[in-house]
Length: 62
Image 1 (cartoon, rainbow, N blue to C red):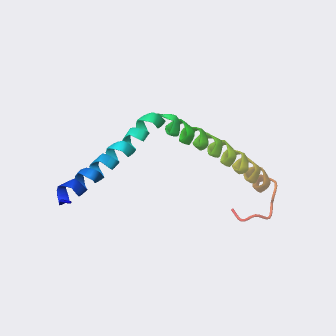
Image 2 (cartoon, helix red, strand yellow):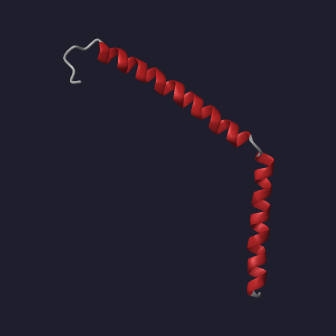
Image 3 (tube, helix red, strand yellow):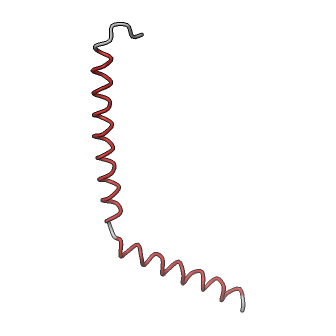
């Protein structure tokens, strides 16, 4: 087995794995986008609660 056979085998494997990315398409991107929006609204809800709590606490440092 020569070194070129080894490198061609690696290239064939990578070509096959990149073919899987075509099957996935934009589904992964849409998943990440959806998770980002869910995380954003979750954090905004927590921030609203913390801001309300801070506005009602006169003993806090500002």
